[in-house]
Image (cartoon, one colour):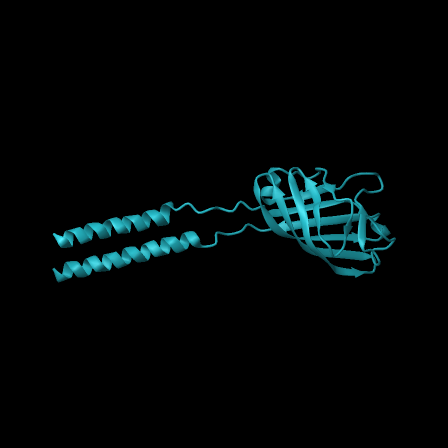
Length: 196
């Protein structure tokens, strides 16, 4: 009778482990992923990008606001190419700024920036920032900003990108523990059966 009780307990323990592995509710991240690019006009604090330290305005010569050039990932559920974006009044290269841009319910907070390349009338600035909005978790992304001297009439390009974040493996680990537990119980039952 004792052997039968042990088997019943082990079966329920195995079922409990399987239930934990298959039915556990893990908090799922809901990150922003994809790529968004903007284009428009920019004015700098100097006449040449070779000496510039700051963006002082984001309107082109015609008074147009920057617009979305392209969008992908889950950003395109809310944002369309051609949508108008609002940029912060000023931005000094090498610094961060809250709400550097806002478009269709998404906000990009610039965390850090650094000049990647500046030479011969071309400027490239890179860094990291956080996109949030529309019910998504704040998501850290890499980004870049480029502009050229007068030949481009002050046109700039700004892009940010993030890839989907995979599951951290907790679900697979729980399933592995459950399967290992089941195998241990199976071996114990086989030993008990062969000893009887």
